[in-house]
Image (cartoon, rainbow, N blue to C red; front, side, top):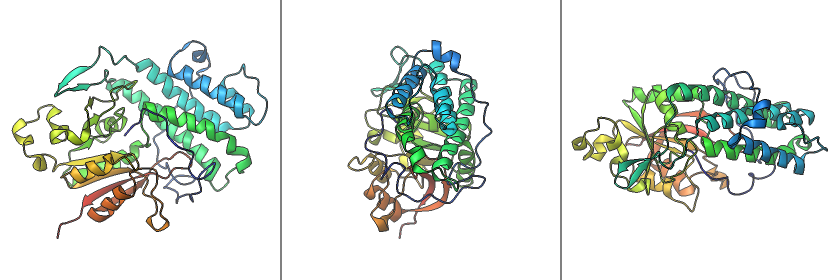
Length: 369
């Protein structure tokens, strides 16, 4: 559900992607992100910019460098990035930068070294760095909702009914790519808003589902949302051992495809006897695949084919088979397997970075004939 490395490849199609915008979600000015939680006031981070090291300072330096290289007009670079973006007539970017900066500052405050803070989880796996408290995470959730709202402002400026001319926004692309890298590294590839978590979790409970298995959990941000916002249990697994902050306990494994019992044995109070019957154990769980890697990587397809349960949550792009479009996640074989074996119970629009078209779909396995 999260990534620890920058996005590979160019921005889709052209500067903003050739894909047509989707219909707007309720309460949204353009294609996604409607119904977001109330946002916090924009943080005043100018003083912190002079003193706080770490991720936020790196974000500022990278943003200034990109502005120096690609801004459409000469700039007084002694100013802070947000001020420069205002000078350039891009208040939407200035607001988004402030929100990304606030999240980087929050992680700076929470970040702990993984070395010396890992614990043995058994069978060669380890748990990651210390997990933030509920109070600490609640404040970050407020900041994240504000970030999603600011991102929607940028999407509206690019794709909305009164979108700005491309000539006025094409220099935004390198900045957004870099800021997206920070969000992907610290949180997740896909952007999961809390209102969607609440709705999906409620629907899952009507089907008797008590938890989600997230075998590509990354930072654990989505797993924490399913726990704290959705009220579901969550098992978070990932093969990547290093993360600035683990939003929930992420069990580091060599390969999620090889974990027996889908990691349910690590749940508090889990019965070893019950977990010998894997199919029975996962009957009340949903597999959660967020941004599985594209072809030629097959981990998403492999996990899907191995999963014995009845429910699947997929956060990613679905492409257009008629146009030969596979999207940026999963790959054609993965999407074909979903179309063949699963039927949707619901599809939710979610906030997207410009040029991307991921959404969240809840599937139930088709009856066997």
